[in-house]
Amino acid sequence: MSIFRSLIRKEVLHLLRDPRTVTVVLVMPVVLLLLFGFAISTEVNGVRLLAVVGQHTDETHRLLERFRSNPCFTLEGIVAPHEADDLLRQGKADAVLVLRTDGGQLTHQVITDASNTNLAQTATAYIESVASGESSSPIVLHTLYNPQLKSAYQFVPGIMGMIFILICSMMTSVSIVSERESSTMDLLLVSPVRPRTIILGKLVPYFLLSCLLLGLMLTLSYTVLGLPFSPSALHVVWLSLLYIILALGLGMLVSTLVSTQVAALLVSGMLFMVPVIMLSGMIFPVENMPVALQGVSCLIPARWYISALRVLMIQQLPVRHILPQTAVLALMTLVVLTLAAKKFNLRK
Image 1: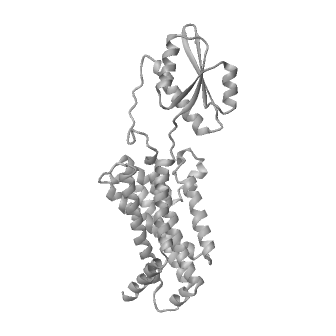
Image 2: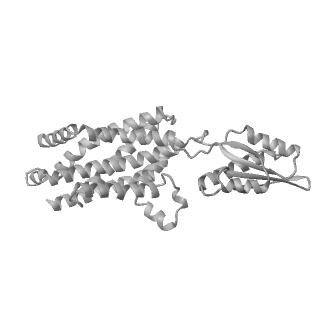
Image 3: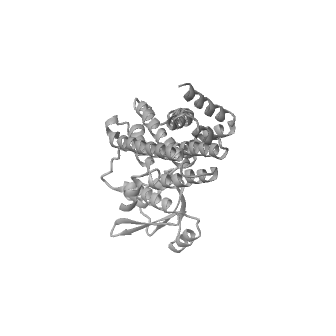
């Protein structure tokens, strides 16, 4: 036990002697969380709209007035058809609403600039929603879990899944490889200390640092970003601790496969970051991917963690609803730690 405490103390002193790294580890996730929570938004406001009206009627006046009073739109004016086409091509408008009266019934056509796909799709949906207001049977909408449609609700679980897999794996792999480059690890490997003691001694300080980071991110999520707080926050903590252990195990596994710090950074950064962003469901729904990529995404730990976090943090459902994701993460953790320990023994 005294040897184990000494290893932990050595690693803690190593962290304290490099305060810049610890500062970056704690500050970068906060910046990303606030950036995605406030600056990056999937909401569309101020859509520049042009109107082409074939025949002015009371119905067209009421419809255009609704667009003028809607904060999502900026009605640039009523123009002729050829002017609307030119302005749209010049990028001076985002969408054109063409209103025609045929047989006493108002019909409309929406033309958008699809060079920005997200803007075009969202603007079309907004315009259709406002234009359908003339219907005598209004549609009653009820939005569950996120009534204000805040983007932070979508991004916070994804950012947490990306940050922990990157930071934890990077810190662990670079730390072990740097000791190997300075021959410190060779001294530990030829000592009578068991490999599992060395592994635990390396992981515990980074686990404690990750716990501090977890507390900081949850505090910002529930206070600054306004995510709803509930008793499920306790389940978020233990689920995140399991995910952190898995991420640290991945870092340990990477350290047994590379021999330089640069290689460890590249593998931990590129190998984990791109799949997490593209295949975990952080931004793009997994269900919309080809079947082959859906199968590949099952191997991405962040997919299961982000899915479970959304159930707990956003939907606030009981813990039984995340049992499949928890089982997958636990199995992955067991497999990764076993592989890392075996490869560590082989190096010895």
